[in-house]
Image (cartoon, rainbow, N blue to C red; front, side, top):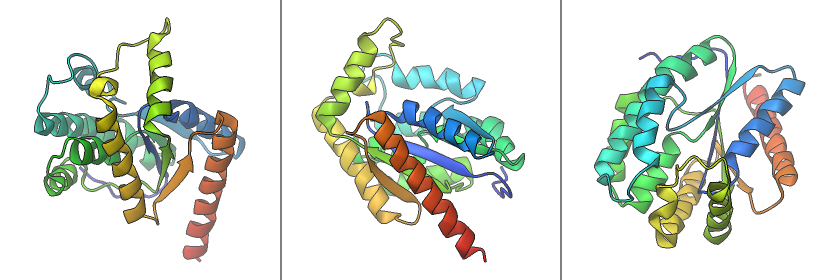
Length: 224
């Protein structure tokens, strides 16, 4: 799989349950459109027909239906299909891609929270993706209590998808997920921006736009 992308930008949103990623993905895409930038939105697991088939295996059903290594492999199988069928073709056609989750989620959930060997996760990721790294990652940080309350309200609605397997894994699990995302962001400051997602969606969106604008300015200056 070739990952030598020449034109588009790859932006990922990361964060725990109820952090508002799906909403902010759409808001950023709308803002980019006002700037004359064509962007597609997608998600993981999923984002391509074959990957969506795998998604249902991961986000539905019993909490203990998979071993951590099985989850790692399933997520990366879906990711391979997502990249090959959606992300890389879009980037090569000069489109921007905004994805609700990517590899950092596998590291946070299966590596930090489930305790699976992180070096093995990294090796599987490289094999599955060719080490394609986002240009920018926006980590939406919210307290576990707030996030789970938000997610619970969403899943209690009439439009509930039943995709609540990870949400049912308990607050201790989600505390480890949150700590994982913050540690990942700390280790990659050139790529990751942490956004306080406790705020209202409009304020969060404003901060995301500032982060994206600053990132673009920095990249343009580096290329001079």
